[in-house]
Image (cartoon, rainbow, N blue to C red; front, side, top):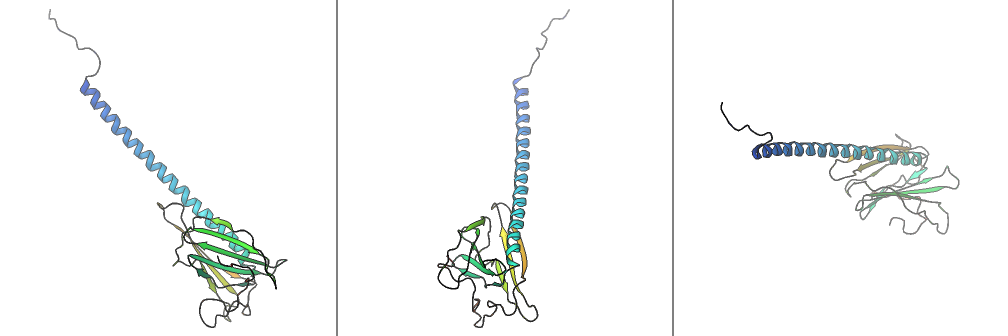
Length: 210
């Protein structure tokens, strides 16, 4: 009868090392997959938020621009883009001003009641976006004067929105018809072709384009 030693159950150090190495590889791959999934989800949510923001701001313009009586030609002052219009179908009449501050990516609006003499106090600025990333070379507001071939004014809006520098910007463009304007609207003419309406509306507040 032969005698010998029976191998005890368990793993050798080499086997444990190999198993742990395999486990670590699987764990790293799993963590990378989770990271990619999280990143893709975040990107999708941010893009959806950008789209929702664009639609909300479109609705704000749509409700106000279409009933305006006259729109000033947009102006760039420093790093800021401005546009104003007068609404005369409300009581009292109302001036609305929008500003895009390209250094802070802030899009805001304010209103005031125009007066024939004296001064008036505008509302506080209402910030509607902090993700508008137009540069000073990317005009967000584009004015088209009324003419015989197109007897109402138009205001084009071209805004870029971006929630994070890691995702692409969402471009929102619209062209609003100013239904209550006409070829006789005072803001149409620009005889000296300097890009400024020869006669502007909504000029009766101090520090109008700060």
